[in-house]
Image (cartoon, rainbow, N blue to C red; front, side):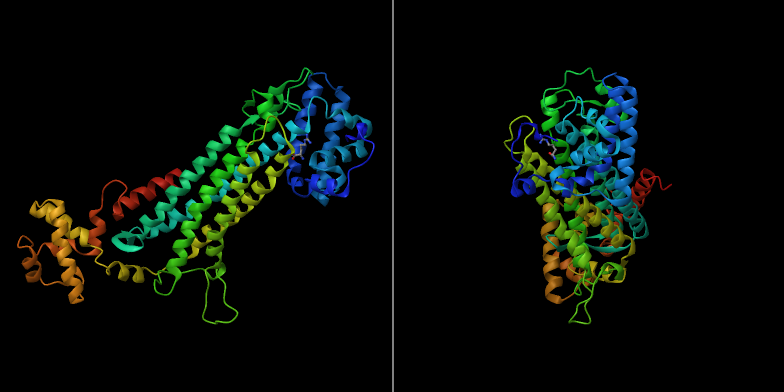
Length: 457
Ligand code: ARG
């Protein structure tokens, strides 16, 4: 395709290091679509004769049908998906194929194809994230009243509801979806027609190709257009943040499935056994989701480092943009699917959760709050009084609400029998009815809002 000024061919090493076809063949659908939009525009603008434009377009359909049926052939001499397709087109329709590359370069071609691919990938991942949200709100609705310990520092802090805990992840995934949507909106401009770097002397219509490919408008600077990979970085940033959320959710399931916790029985379908210890049921899927977050953020770092310090405009380093994006996309899709299954099919052992919520003096804050409310005691003083009660209960081996009233009165005479109502875990969660709080009523409200946002009712 470019041999005109060369005497010798490339060495074996050159061919190998240069070839991107092993991975960029994944762009074939986008490459065909962009070429069809380009040639239709060349025909409409009179840059290529109408019959040649039709011939090329039909030829591209034939190439696409071959790829669909047999896969994309991998010939290193043809370097990449763009030359592979043009070469096959030439075999199929003859010299007219040579007119397709008028007023375009592989630089704007690959920038266009890759944007289209990332855009498609965002649409797919968004559907996956929506399914995960559906699973989360469904289980949260079932467990709006189920009480579990809430933790800070992984130490029992205050009782919360399982529904509230699950809805925390719904919020994270909402932000992930909005980050992907932002990225999609920002990237949806067409670089096609920027040509090699400086634009073209042919009277092209960039708005026409932009529109045909579903872009909002053409980009406005040809140098930037062929060398910008912000769209891929935005995507990887959103993917990385999403993977961090999934890793946290995975980690919760791993902890909850451990024997000392025993909060969940994970689905068999997402667990594995041990070849030596017959009793084991391991949370491998969750562990791999946790691990994949490392690889996905590694992909982000890889592309950031590739782009660092590159002068305008295109440099071949940028061919390395695709593997990290492809890798992150497939790892993220798998992670989302695994967590969706886990949320949907895990059995929550609410008896174990509730039992744990009653340990660790989880309602100590409720005693302090009661002293503030009923005794008009400043919170700092109430905190101190409660600390003394916890200390006494701990030495006696009792829960707070098992301490006799006489002992509590000895700590502070303003305490009376009404306090016991405030010390149950039910009272504790019901009291936290502030906007966004853990009270079952709040959780039901938020689940209802989420369900309607998801179009579930
Ligand atoms: N395979 C190349 C890539 O992915 C296409 C662009 C090649 N451009 C060039 N000037 N050699 O970046």
